[in-house]
Image (cartoon, rainbow, N blue to C red; front, side, top):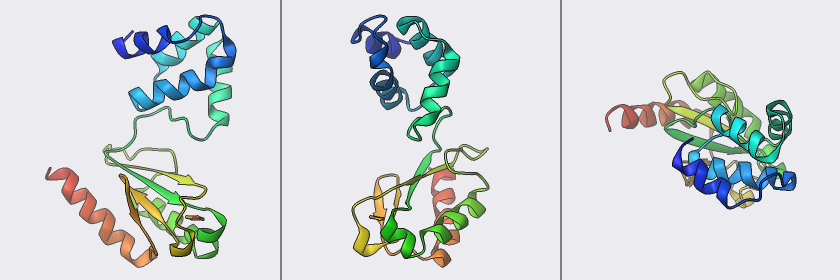
Length: 156
Ligand code: FES
């Protein structure tokens, strides 16, 4: 087990199943996603089967089971952004990256997720690219944006 997992598990009480979600969240915050190793360790620590843990964790869209891309994009699909065309943004990003929300491109460059509201409703549709908010996003600007990001990743 990696040191990070050991340190995290020590903060929790063995066998206390109510801690499952906060424990998984903390692991994800530190490691970046829920590895198979982490699921197995948490299972034996809390006395839960890995099937049960996967079942519960997949119910929450915030948990990831694969590493994020080098660039992580969040697309708001809250009511306000939806009314301003966020679905077209989602479709275009899916087309440009070739993967679905929650997946990572084969080259490891991109992953994206759909979120409910990022607090910028008046300026929607809103996306967030590695922590930077982009407002009033237009579908036409996405191919160039993805191309530019790819160039930056590959020449970094
Ligand atoms: S609904 Fe998109 S920022 Fe609020």
